[in-house]
Length: 254
Image (cartoon, rainbow, N blue to C red; front, side):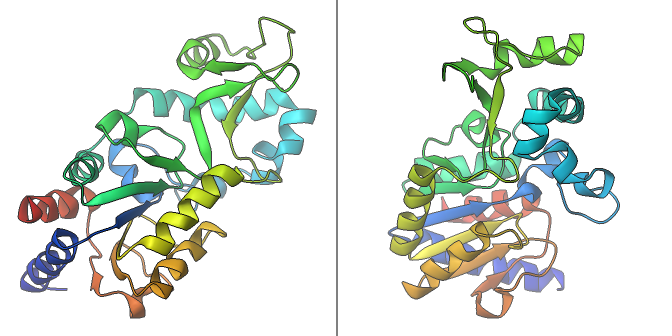
């Protein structure tokens, strides 16, 4: 796509968002890679290229070999807690604050949308920001545990019952939160504009959410480097850096 084509696509995306009555954003790992957080599936650099997810990031691995699980999680936790929101996160927060986005549905667990100022964030794959005790079900703030976990190499234990705490991320073999999922589906059913950012739309069931928006005749904007199964149905395709594209769109919208 030439530079004039990029400019035209950005103008088209801005026009759609400017007229949105119920705009929704769906974000994947690609919105956080400019913040230094690796994605999971990219060839050569993805986390699942380096580790077998069923051995290190499944519910079974957490229960049977928690040290293996936390040894895998520790560098990712360190990266997430040092990361800062990038211009793409801040652009979506501006759109929400302007009333043009009603919700941000994210596959990410890093909490960067909230730190950028977004309010209605549906974390369908959970969050690193909190932990829960599988024993007594007490909840805990991740910021109180991850620095110690990273520094000491130890395991986080519940102060009440000493059970090993589980981060509130959705692991393999684990069901999604139905409350969060139902809210995400409802927003997509109501959407008249769906903005897909940094997601290749390969991971189910989240990859199916845009179908609900299309059934409502929503306009779909896709800002992602790689192709997706929905490209042919999208009104606007922006195969460019999200940290460059979204601020340019927002500048034209606002």
